[in-house]
Image (cartoon, one colour):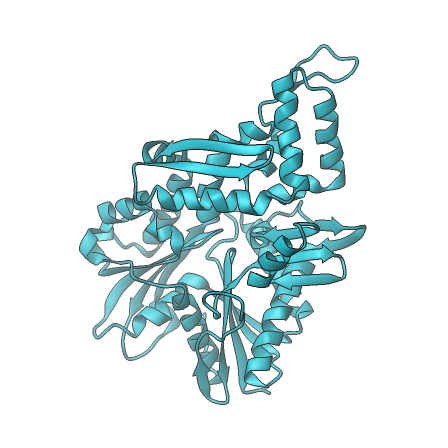
Length: 428
């Protein structure tokens, strides 16, 4: 048992598991028989009731099959640094965030163990360069991950920054020493590692800097809601409470949840849900009331997941066209809106700025200028967004960018980290 280690790339959107087992490295294990790529498991939990949970592709399949009853959770990793987010309640049963993450990690562990035919109690788990820009919140997120890993049955865990793991993978392609920037753009975080890569080996001193930003694909998805689509769901609905002359609009605490794919599911929690019901009663006009009714249909008919999938499709569509029609066709939520690339670029300006501030900090802390970087290796879906690509090309030149990376590069490096650990070498 001591010779077996799992390598877990626990992502906001997708997760993968590899292993170092009996002296051999094992790449991505086939964990999800119902997925198109069986090595790629969607980071999803679906509870039709508090005592039953489905995972990955089966979570979506069962969610649809069971008429979208129960609770589907996505992007729950992004809550880790949020100290005010404790978890949720499913039919009077409290499920903490650590429970949610632990349940998912346990399922990954069980499926990997079945494939290896071996119990495994040691794991290398990837972590973002920063869960949060606040060091206290970042430490809190890591503490939560440690608790979740223990709940999943891991007795020993090492956390390796995901961009550093990606760097280990890229090292295999290198024949001479280079200064390489690894950019890992996921669903929840954008992470950067500046590293001196040598074909002959790795020393911890080769890591020149690690930095990042807790914004990526989900933050880009949310701009479509916050700038246009949330109006369909009461974000601008006006209401007047009984015995008051003040005209109010939906408070930010509600609209911020509405805008984000990880947070919107929590509008179903009792206190928030009752507040929205009260707002509907006190709405000033028919249009205001209709918008809130549309929100109830979105929540009660479990249309949150398909709605944000339609937003994701629109984001991808704008990668190849100047404009793209967002379409959502569900009774009482029939929405067609045209979005342009120019609008997307303008709305995403703050997210883009924060991402590249993380990159600049990484370069500055290493004392390396963009011109001194020999190679820029990119991984993650958000790296393909055209204005992210254009900004990188502007800083480093197109010829230094390597963008044909895939989901497995971080995992491959985590597996190598596990082999270092097994041989008694320090990883970070």
